[in-house]
Image (tube, rainbow, N blue to C red; front, side, top):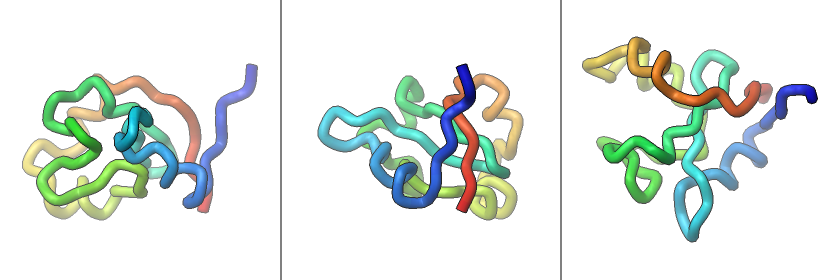
Length: 79
């Protein structure tokens, strides 16, 4: 089975709203943040699920990329 590829439109569907899972993309990898309490409702410190957040995690996140290792990978992101 090949890995799912998300573009901007497809990723936006996974915003954690209305029963949808919450996904975010960082450096071309799509992560499932649905099980992370801090991402409840698809929102975390002003950021929204369903988006590409590389610049946010590199520039604003106090925990940086280390948290990504704990998240399930659900696919690849290509703009």
